[in-house]
Image 1: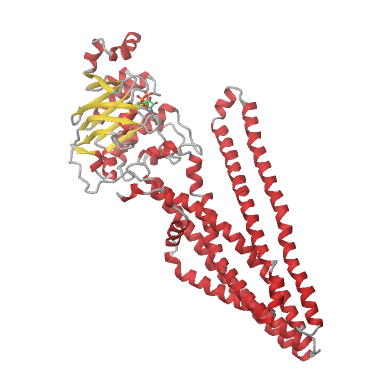
Image 2: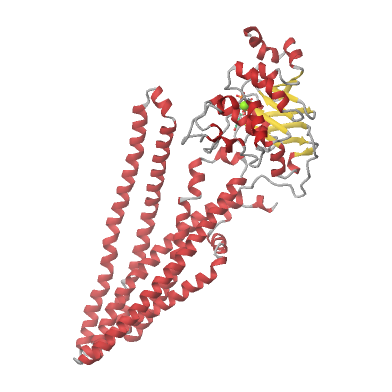
Length: 587
Ligand code: UTP
Ligand code: MG
């Protein structure tokens, strides 16, 4: 797979630019239009000083009033044409930038949906979000404005230089000396101010994140009386936003006046040298005016070039980071020759499975487990034994580092992810419900499920009892904008959701940890018929749940150390009876 050979360090200037320009491909018409407009704009802009030269030499100096009006009309005409060209050019090029940015964002979101879980374990949420939002602004700015504006500025500078040299080479040289400094100064300014404005953004991001964390954890903050701490931390973040903003303002204060001052040096040169030439009759007044207007017109293109150079650098850096993610982080590989899962109930096999988290030690060290079709197996073990780790291998949230996991006799890595995940239903340890009506939460995995099946699942999972008492029954909005369910209610909705999904292998990770024991007994009794014909793995810490299982296995030290009927295991003196023995006494 060539994807894995990708090295983000390869993303230097040109490879990144090539990739960026590839995103332009559909826009060549707009881009060509933009460049034609830029060319026209330059031509028209250079015409105006020339017309001013003529009006002075031809009408003003000879005091020929009759010629003033036609010149004025001509200048107005050219200026209007220039206005129009500039106007449409901005419409066209802004669209390119916005579309390229949107395309980049779509690519990133698309990639996010495919990234393996491990990616999210190791990338801060803030980073993942900003890569697809703030980070893309320089790209839009550069593509939508910088490229065409840069070309226009360059044409303008070359055109003006040609005109100036043609009129008076010595004066062009003398007044031109100062002008490149405008560009350099603009570049130096951009170089200093951009990192600061980026930092202001980042600090604001920290501030938002800290505020968000405090809001989400407000319960803890207030319960433990940590208000002062949080206040101090908030003050720290707010203070650094202020400090960096002040630094940014200082840089602006230092550079912006200079950007106005330098061009006046050039004008002074023209007055000094050109004024003498006019006095000696070596230059007409019109040519003198041409020099001054052209030099003034050059200020912005020079500044723009300096600015654009920097925007380009930032765009390339940010695009480089995005492409590094797009190409450097492989999605969970889909099989090249996918195999189909057999029809009907499926068996499950773990064959000397090892699993390790990138940052941790090896959690599973050779798990062998064969589960027959339709069997219910309880996976037990003390906390941290690796139950969740084992179950997460089935829908391929992670892949085994060694060994194989088979569903229906097929290695899970040989099945298309979509097929695998519709065959394997999952209730996670901390289920997430969406902020939509209860009804939609229940049918999230299978929107077209017939309502009687949903009701049956709700009965089996113990949702019916509380659902009917909600303000709008099954149409009640769940979550922050609606009704917040209790932990146990959430777990039951998640269980019903998994039953509605109609998966043939059900993976339940501690599905009733937040449900009281009495309700749990009822659920467990309901559950057996509801999962008839399905192969079920339940990770659990509760004896009452284990008791519905046909079989229990105990994980310890990364291996299965006990395997048998729950009743037999309880009677023995292994780890199982240590884990659950007390509960029997208590009951
Ligand atoms: P598990 O999460 O598989 O344990 O973590 P468990 O058996 O399900 O535990 P309970 O009953 O739900 O509490 C197994 C080991 O893997 C590590 C954990 O530190 C734990 O020791 N682990 C887990 C990681 O290193 N990274 C992870 O992302 C998750
Ligand atoms: Mg767990």
